[in-house]
Image (cartoon, rainbow, N blue to C red; front, side, top):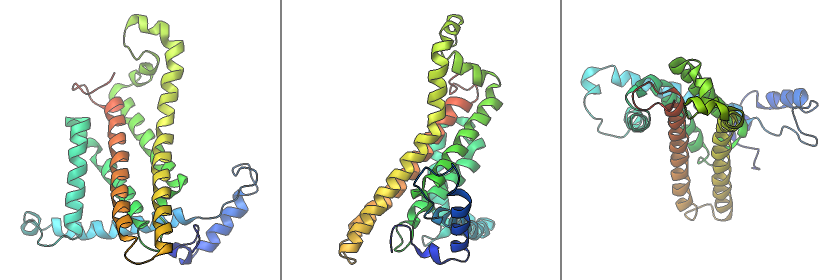
Length: 262
């Protein structure tokens, strides 16, 4: 299989969607001159991850809904144990970075973390491609984080969320520096979703390329250490994305509890 071919390519409607995307976008200014759309695997990968998360969430919910089984730790590591361990780890990170108001943001950050982690791990399956090795997916995640922390910044601080960009020092004389500081602060704010997307996609592309290289040379035994390394990269990149998202929330949307940056 080449880089743009995976098991996702054989799912119903893949070819039709690819042809439709090529027809609608290749002839427009959306695609740079000489470029073309060669894959839509990230769309199908996102749908597969969504299906996996819905099914496994329902399985975990069925277990947690029963009090006698919810309070007892499972004897084997299964779906429920994975969700419990994963979300507990995310919550601890959020509580450390954001502070007491972290509970408000758990649904969004927890869901985003699960989506990114499962998408990353999908790339470790032979013949599969992770949706997070495509900038369309990672930029979408970054933009969601950008909209989310700005929304809560406006909710928590009102117009102060905007004026803080003009006068980050918060003093009367700071307004004299507004013409200089506002462009710098605005650029720093805008590049955050871009850096989130590029960092995640670049690491997933590199990880997948290394696995393909060694698996192509000797498909047995030799690639195993690189699969372990690849899993660690998947985990670390999920953690980095979550930590940075929490940092942005803490900087812009924390309540007046000693964690606000305004």
